[in-house]
Length: 340
Image (cartoon, rainbow, N blue to C red; front, side):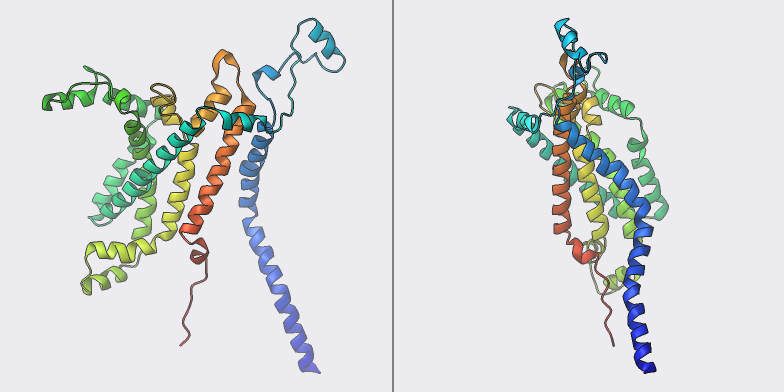
């Protein structure tokens, strides 16, 4: 009888343990969940609501023109205003925009070119180089590469405008003229080159730091054993380093993709979407222009919010794709321990 009672008590404790572990986990995660809810989910819901209205600077009228006074104001020619629910009309207007395909192509080209060449590609190369040289020299090189990131955006872009300026002021022209290259306004001739480079130099520094830390954390025994077996440096990078930094690769790729999708500051300061008609206009810059920088002072917040909400959906889609490509489910599995 006592054995049965003890067995029932053990089973009761076992049933309570998962609930206790779940409660502890949720308690530990609650501050993060609160912040994510306040600063992501709530703004996204507000963005969705605004995108379903005709909210603009024209919808704010005289605050006295409410209720029965609205008809009197309209008869007197006083704008009454008022926000109205318009459903999906902003989204229909968005997809019917004649420049929608061009802006989408510009965005995809900008994101993936900058991501592959600089934010992940160059960042990984810099991390590998600076972790395979003398430690203090590598630290100094990484510190120098951080200068574009800590430089104020306006000053940073003014430097690039000076480099790409037309003759006789352009620094690039002064270097190329002696070798027979005709001077030209390079920012107008090759705007995408400077858009990608200016953003890439800043973005590469973030990935460089993450990848460097991840590479430094790899046990040296693995690399020494591979060298003893005769592995070359490229073989060590391909078979040891890259597989062991999948987590940082996933994080940097996902974070930088979302960052590039939402960033427009340097493009705004460098080209403002030009030169010409939407030549370097990207999605986030279009949302800014539609919502906050339109002609005649009419800020179309509802229409700009529609562009912004579609951008949120695009970011979620890319995140899910990255989780599948990097096999996120396998990364979060508990390590398998062989029982002897």
